[in-house]
Amino acid sequence: MRTTTRQAGFTLVEIAIVLVIIGLLLGGILKGQEMITQARIKNVINDFNGITAAYASYQDRYRAIPGDDAGAQARWALGANAVPSSPGDGTVDGAYNLPTTNAVEPESRLFWWHLRQSGFIPGATTPSNVASNQPTNAVSGMIGAQTGLGAPTMGLAGLIVCTANVPDKIAIAVDTATDDQSSTTGSLRAALQLTSNPAIPAGPYPAYAETGANQYLLCRGV
Image (tube, rainbow, N blue to C red; front, side, top):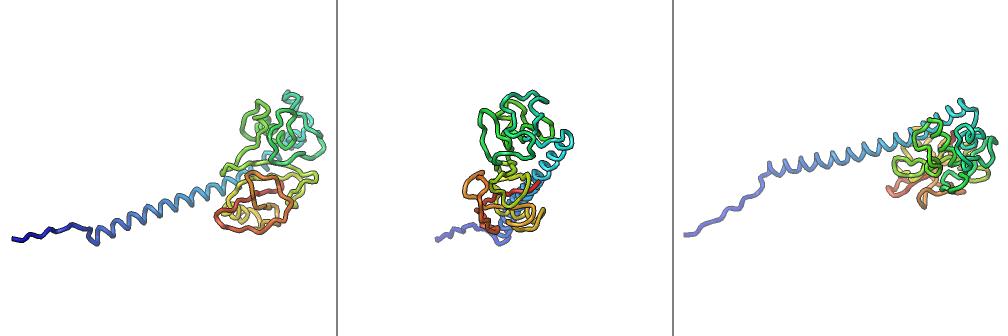
């Protein structure tokens, strides 16, 4: 007597349920990624706005520019390495991305020490090589400030704040939300990065290209 073995399989209903679950999971992942991107866009914008507000508040209180403040050393007894290189001349000397010198800090780093010491931005106020460190943005890039003094500033005049390592999608969204969507005009400019936390290049500055791999250095006039 012959017997047959019946193999169990998925019904169409079961397959449909599995596909629906997979679709919901994928949708949730994509939605989560988009929420993270939107949060980073807001963080970059808030960094620019917060630093601008802190800078204006410092000027209003002390009648001086942070980093270039001739009275900061005596006001807070900060020590010899907190002496501006050319105090009170209206400029913040040094590039935005300079490292610590473990001696007299350049004004572009004193900028952060003075703002922290005044309480306008959070962060350590001692020791000096930590208190003068540049902060980081939402994508772990450096945030810095400089005036220029002949150094490239993407055509921006006066004090500028730069934020580095910004992915192309976020950079474009920030420019769209706050300026004119152009990397070469307006109050916000951008340079394509070839290295992490680069010095501001001399140019030319190409238009934005969203490839998913490009990173940009964003600089805005304060």
